Image 1 (cartoon, rainbow, N blue to C red):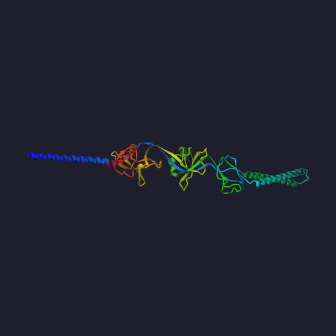
Image 2 (image 1 turned 60 degrees about the horizontal axis):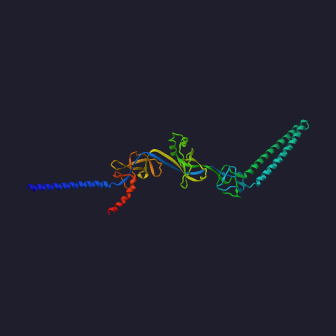
Image 3 (image 1 turned 180 degrees about the vertical axis):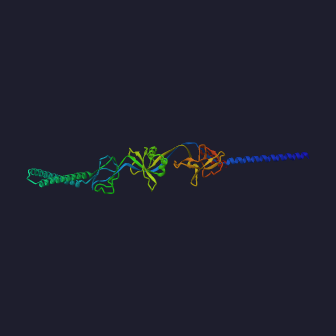
Length: 397
């Protein structure tokens, strides 16, 4: 009987031991399965770095001087001496107006001067003669004074005639329209035979001095306050401290020469809430033309900044969030504050993250959820692992 009891006891111990081994094996498999189920997510560890950002502003381009050319007298255009887009020098003839009537006016004014001069000569001879007679008491003082008055009247008429001659000559000179400065000729809407007048709404043309150009853009009141550190610094000092700006042309290329912000308007437009700003660019090759458009690119550099990829963030109720990876490899959604200036690919974080934090940069908004345990990997390893993950089901088949 003891032998049977011993045998049964031994069998019980064997069954219990087998059950314990099976249980341990199951727990190990579950733990391994949990580890295998943790998704591989690319993460980065944050460290301070320099952020080179830029702010862009739409701009319109104008020559340093854009002078509307208008005639100072009315007349028909007899000759157009330049062509559109032509470079001209100061004093170069642009248009010639009909000079016939103005030449006639000069001749008439000259004749009036000659006549008045003759009248003065006659009056002076008479006055001299009357003076001698008066000194000899042959004529009365009244008659002598009358001759003097006639002389003064003739001299006044001569002065008037000379002024008319000067005016006639000036009007004749105005029939030759010249360029007031060096520049480039704009469009010429009126040609030979057209009537030109100072009162015409449309100028004969425009001469633009494009050796330097101004790019006009706008800054908001908030931008101006930020420039002056909320009024702590003067606007002039803020302008001088601004970095050089670049101009992106309409085809997307960057103009090779940098410009400098020159002035900021002292008036803020009530309708737009912004102030006009002017940047000056050298234009030796004449590439930039008045009336053109572009985009002002203003650099904004940040030292020791926390920079993260934009794809690592998600938005909830107008707030930005990232997933921080804690020491247990669990992701925790964390709100952050970013700089409004960005390059379209990264964000500069001003609050919510610090150097040394780990954040997830893949699967945000799709695979990740708050509290999920992940298997962190280096972003450089993700492309190499993606094909292996795609090939795994084929190997299982």
